[in-house]
Amino acid sequence: MAVRKILGWGECTSKFTPSNGGSAETHDDIVDSSAALSVDEGQEEEALVEGGRAEGRKVRPDKYIIEFDRRLEDGDDFTPGYVEDAGDIAIIPKNVGAVYAELKDCSCKKTLKQDSKDGLVGHYYYKTKGSTDSEGNLDDVDIKKHTAGDTYTAVSTSSDGYSEKNPKALGWFIKNGNVYIHSWDTAPVEGVTYYTLS
Image (tube, rainbow, N blue to C red):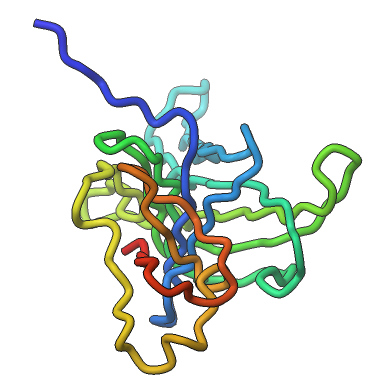
């Protein structure tokens, strides 16, 4: 029997959760074809005896990398630099049911580049440490499924300072049919429901 697979191709949203307990940072304006998951494979080492026979073998843990680019309209939400133990990162596909990887306890490096096609671009680079559990399995990479209903949460209009908030800067979303899209509003619009990605 054929199984319908939901693919994660197309539009996606980055979600970064800082390790210091701050608010999650989301972006859905990722430059086309720039989001990528790759692996820095751990090196294999052998203890050899005379004659070249391996007496023992050890493989260092793999380290996973997520990177992507964003076109920058202003520099307010981007600061180049490096942060160790920055937090968790995921590139979440818009298609409900698609699977994706979440990397935990990553370092983060942000750099700038510019060209005639994309203008000023912020490059985000996140890398795991290769942490393992007691059995040697990686514990800083999770495979998750994008589910409906528990990902987006409506922002309360009665929350403190709601009218002074900047939906665009805070990474809030609006719902367009069955799809959540990043809001470009710089102040809450009356009658519009905003959502956070959680």
